[in-house]
Image 1 (cartoon, rainbow, N blue to C red):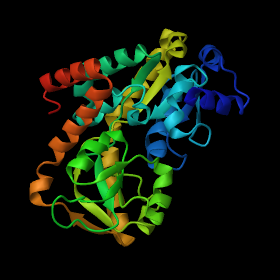
Image 2 (tube, one colour; image 1 turned 90 degrees about the vertical axis):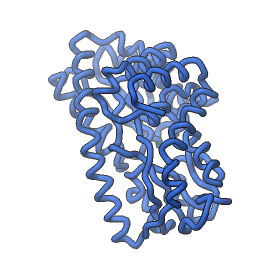
Image 3 (cartoon, rainbow, N blue to C red; image 1 turned 135 degrees about the horizontal axis):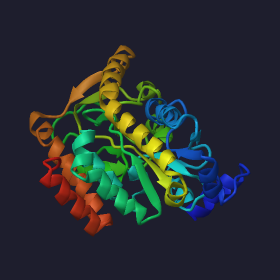
Image 4 (spheres, helix red, strand yellow; image 1 turned 180 degrees about the horizontal axis):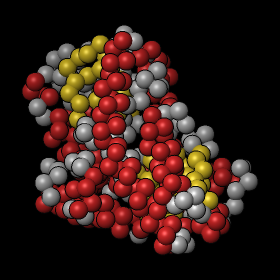
Length: 329
């Protein structure tokens, strides 16, 4: 059903289900994005990547972007996989029902060079190629990735006792370990869910809450921060295979550049966003020292638990590879 909805959405724009092949020949590619046009991930990663591809290819490869208003966030993987669209900019937790290998990146240290040198990116790419997708880039959004945004301050242990917390499946083991209940809601729906009391808080990245104006409906930023955010850029494998070597090389150069620059840029953005949210009236709250000391292990073990439950053998092999490189628990 999701695939049908994605194809219908694409055809509603007058696109052909054979568009990926035509796009590859013309090197005029269409990319679905999981986040709205004005959202920080789109502005600071997807659009700069598009610009870098054009620069690196000397204009021989162009990419046009469409967002969740074209195909809903959680339904975007299959239309790209089937070739209705050529590329996908997303967080891999959004297609965890198909594979959970990609979301494992959030439990792996964010050093982009070490990830590639250790074979982490190559392993994930090989896995996705078996699903008809090519991993192009995996930029991390900062040294650390996440925090909890709460309507009420943390008090006592467990810190999320009885609270309903927005979070994709990656967060649920950690939320539950902290006494809460995870609720899957897309980013664009969190504001209204907080406003209506559907959830009591949200697990989210260090960037983007201001874009969504959550300061209007939630009062607290919780410390400590934890984990990494590994958004990814994929390409339909047939589209990739149809590109010339020069065009592939241009995409690969753009990928390395966006990965190398992302961490410092997002660390600065996160620091500024925290300041802005406090200026807008939000306050800080903190989990107990005992719980805070467990955050990284709770997060990483939770992510690996989800990945190994949903995609057992490849996730376990990836965890072994990352452990050998000293990049995860």
